[in-house]
Image (cartoon, rainbow, N blue to C red; front, top):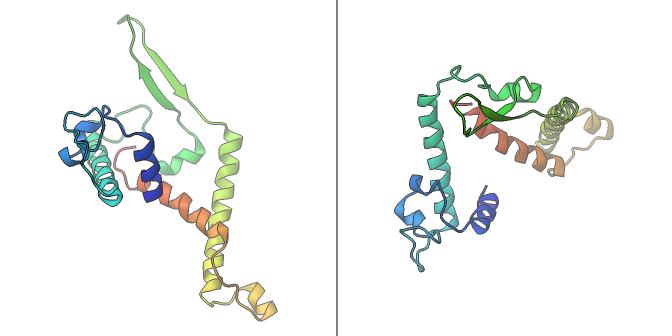
Length: 173
């Protein structure tokens, strides 16, 4: 998370439309902001924590304005791999008679394959963790050894779930 936020803060050092959600101390670090101070500093951890808290507050407020079921494109995160609904961006229209929107939908073959890989990788990582704890696995019983250390698969699966879990905790989808 800190690495991703570090890259985010490095790539976006300037003021933007979401600044009003952040504290004056945070805003003081953004070039072009009314609170900007050249010598203002916040640690990466402080900025990351504030960013995560503000994003959670915003999503919580949005759940009040748009309760579950109030939007035709509302969906629960567990349904996303099933691709039951697309993502809609409504565009401003010059005429009140016409409405414009962009609807994104994924490729079912890619999503289906990715879902199967994610499930298989998660099972493999769990199996690897069990093997490193000393619990017997079929292979270790055959060879008389226990597999040690975490494989790259473990870290990939951990990264995947660390990215997915925050969405599962949101009230608004």
